[in-house]
Image (cartoon, rainbow, N blue to C red; front, side):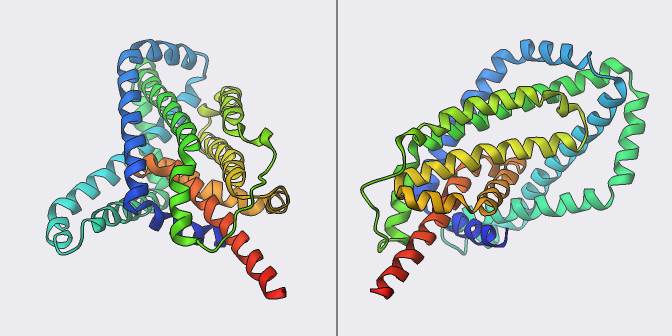
Length: 315
């Protein structure tokens, strides 16, 4: 995980380059708008479906899960409100002294800081917060609690659909921005003409289908507090781990390099999990697939650069 942190910081720097950031915004924002429009049109049918699903769940689980969802919503609002207040009061006099690129650095770092801060506040006060919410939910009629959870569950389904489609789009356009990063950071790294097996080129399509299947199979776990967060994190990490690792290797690795890198399973999972954690953070979650694939790119290119330097030294 320590090495993954290094690749994470380098990936943040690369994402804040205007050519990469522009592509992330051009792909992420329109796609988000499309899914907001789809959600607006299909919201009522989705609520009807999630409401029926919740009727199969014991009220004790509904109440416990409702408490967790409400806590997450409180954290989400606290992060955004804190960011808005700081930006309104402190941001302008500070940011006007720096270049335009600093705006993006400020946004990313401030949201990340508040996300960690409020997560720690909730974590250290979890028994009190959870108990108060549980008491509040007990006072409400079952229909009110189930309706609230149905609304949150519908939002979760649309959000996962957005993440999955953005994952596919980034997989398709990966070469356009990864080649730009390579020209800046790895000009001396030689890329062989022969790549890995052609069967890996469509791994992102295969894994997208499997992700949907696994998500449906794990759907009952969504009603178990804490376990639902862990399972969702693992599903996202699995999606990025396999498809993006293969996607980058398909562009820049030989078959021998691919087989060698494949043995570093811990590093692959560490990068995927670290990137997947960003899906829980508001605003930054739009850029999660870019973080993931750029981190894999840096790890793979660093490996290639080191090996090629050793080969030249031996000669």
